[in-house]
Picture 1 (spheres, protein in one colour):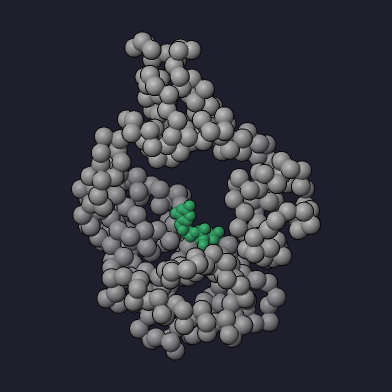
Picture 2 (cartoon, rainbow, N blue to C red; picture 1 turned 180 degrees about the vertical axis):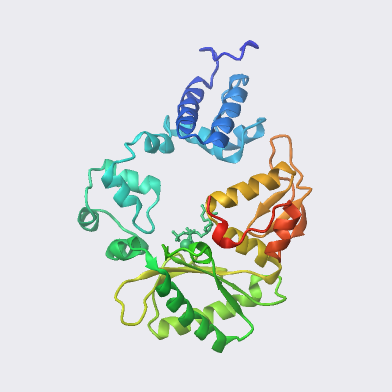
Length: 338
Ligand code: DCP
Ligand code: MG
Ligand code: MN
């Protein structure tokens, strides 16, 4: 192609560009500025590319194309379409789809597939499709998980966990993060952060989590294990619990965090997600990186902005220090609602 930047029929990526364009237009419509820009830049690169890009690896080699869009490019070449785009084109008020997406353990592509197959109700799904064990629980307790938890109940459920924890290891510290820490009157789930002074890895806490889950299951408090990564020990546990005397199942998450990362984890898991995004963006403007493990500087990036190393840790242990390092006046959790 010439240097005009126009897509000509001679560009072998013309179909890919067309679909990426549609996806970019969607993000522009929903005012997602970052993705709109990312798609625009990727399209710009493809327009200047003279060979056909078929795989994510090939795409990622190119300038200004990140991992996510690279994956999308491969999907387009393989399927002549984009699941995410079909999803975006669906009427957002489509009640069947919205209902399916609220089932615990059901993601966008699965929900869309069932809706497109013509299933309309949870009963249809139970009778006609293959469900994972988690999805079965998600359907059986659909209304439970769809009901927000009053703050007093979160406190009461949390107290049961803290009491059990103190018997197993009195040095372990448990904090309820998420909407509860922001002071919300109701929560969608209970987000527990679990740490212990002077730990630098979650390995030191794995036995504790095992013991805690076993104890709380034996006593009838935990009623289901959901996203429990199989095989090797994991630092997270997702499941359901009940308050004695209350039949409603509640979603509860446990996350192990080493003390050296507790500040960053608290910041991340307190949210809200929009506030988190603005803090990460601010870190980015300084050339730093903020994630749930810490605030880092000197993150080295390659020509395609891909990360070459983790960078140098500025702060991970102390939440207030992270605010200070970023030059942001301390905001109590109750004020982190955007
Ligand atoms: N989080 C995030 N980005 C996401 C998901 C989560 O930054 N995509 C962070 C911010 C959230 C926290 O994790 O506050 C906990 O996630 P939840 O989904 O449990 O959200 P909340 O606890 O804020 O709300 P809810 O009351 O609905 O549980
Ligand atoms: Mg939550
Ligand atoms: Mn949660």
